[in-house]
Image 1 (cartoon, helix red, strand yellow):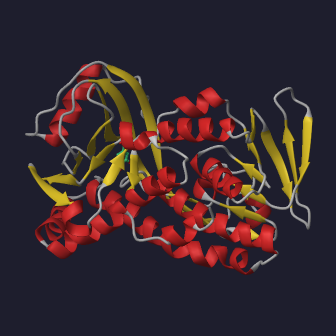
Image 2 (cartoon, protein in one colour):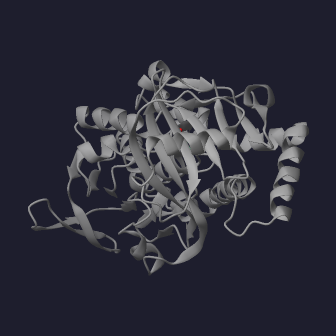
Length: 390
Ligand code: DHB
């Protein structure tokens, strides 16, 4: 097997395949340090945590992560709690994606996984023995032949073309705003996450640890993250969650996250398949990206085991059909949360008040809160069956 991409999808797939004694080589264009330090989202569904811990991929999440049993939705100056545990019996875990990556990388490398950092894939050719061409760290050409190739190489996937016929073919949506994310040294401003709809734009108050916090402001996609002073960032965050008081402190990291929705036109062809962001991208509201990647990987690992160990292609031929319903539910949920909470540049008073109507319908009805809670904590997935991969 060749797996392109050492993100959560690629590394977890290599882990599940190794448990079934299927060998893989992972090709990754970034360095290990880049992977381990890039700041990403921080929410894991309970089933994601269960899979990581029960397969031995990461147990640190149980020690260093924090379980969150609900979130607050804020609008019109008031907060409303959505009680995930009471509504669904599950919480979610706050544990940053780069910590998951550190755990997965050290587990895989300790177990002898072949991971080639700094290798850029240039072409994938399908066939009975698919071929991957790449440029090695020293600029030399690398050719690998294998039984199956998986593109787990993110939204700019180099593998996608071998599956869909073109690098961009699929269903696509852009949004006229982005998130300006910060990390700061400060105590938590709230025990749970706050998603705030405000007339000044959306804000999200998240956490990282007792001394480090993560927060986001809706912004223009072209915003220069260095353009605002710390004072201005705090003023803007504060007015978007008012009257809830924020604990402030030095800001030591800033980034701008683009918003896109995308589903590739196909996810499997011949001996090549796509998982995670290579297959689909969601906007960050609701933190579905990595959880959706993990759900794909479970289905794909099972299908590859049947194909490569038993010569049975039934499951791989059903892969797309099996994963698409969850992908589209997550697309809808991420879009729904995004449109309900953000202010579009041309928003009228009608749009603002309609959003309040929508948010009231959600928080005032148990059915509304439950709908949000089920989606946020993650719809049931065939975890036990998939763990039989092990
Ligand atoms: C975080 C990111 C999200 O997109 C989200 O919905 C919740 C939390 C985070 O980085 O903490």
